[in-house]
Length: 223
Image (cartoon, rainbow, N blue to C red; front, side, top):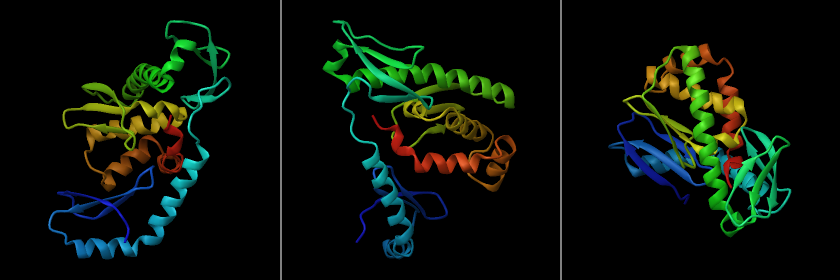
């Protein structure tokens, strides 16, 4: 039997989500029997196992960080080589010659310091880019917040608050733009109806390609 997590809601259909860690989330309407859910999952077993295999391959490809000189980190899809320099104070910076420069002090907790730096970068970069795109397409939002979500790139609240995962800034610029446009359209259309996707196609004709790329390459967002 396949292991999975059930989330019940007011939705009308069953939705399967294979997460980046290869786990399965099943979203179902209230009132649906577990017997029906089991049969549905079994019918989709081939698709599920294919997706899980893809994520497992990505996990093997993106090996755990060593935090050594020359190791590559991505910022808005651009590669920066880690450069460790002397220093008793924790400092991190991106250089114009493609380096992610950190002091030796940061090696006491490298993941912590570099993740903190990504969050600061994301706050500046995503906020600025969202404002630019919103102005072009005529959208107005209430606020922008950066979170640490691992499986959700962004979200839009009923009050017009936009939320983005800092991990998004690891991805190429065109993928960042895709997620921003996706959430901006949710300011206008709250669901994922045909009207929503028609609007996405109007603003970003290749949004399906970008969405597919993000799903396949989500393993890039791990530190």
